[in-house]
Amino acid sequence: MTTRQRKAAQRNVQKAQKAARSKKTISNLSSKVRSDLGREGAKAARRGGRAGHSYEERTRTELYEQAKKAGIAGRSKMGKSDLIQALRRS
Image 1 (cartoon, one colour):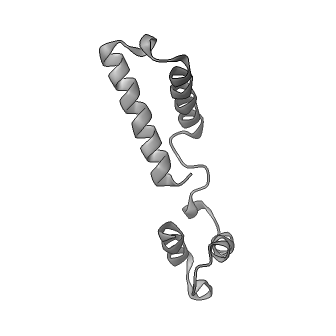
Image 2: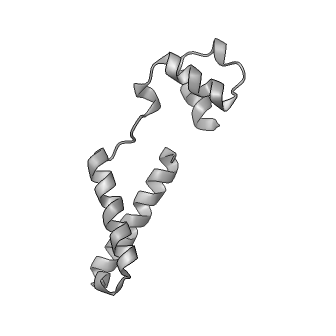
C-alpha cells in the first residue's frame, strides 16, 4: 500500500468514525464495518502514524534495488534523493 493510499484509507476511517460519533450511529453499523474500523485504527496506532519503511530510512543501495525491480531507467546515475523521487513517481 502506498503512502497516498494509506492516508486516503485513514481519512476514510476517520470520516466514518466522526460521522458515527456525531450521529451516535456506530451501533447501527454492521459488525463487519465496526470491526474493520477498529482494525484500521489499531494498525495506525501500532505504526505511530508513520509508514512502515519510508524511502528516507533506506540506504541508496536498497533504493537502487527497488528501482531496478521497478525498471526505472538511468538509476545508476541517480543519487538517493533522485531515486526516492523516481520511486514515488513510478
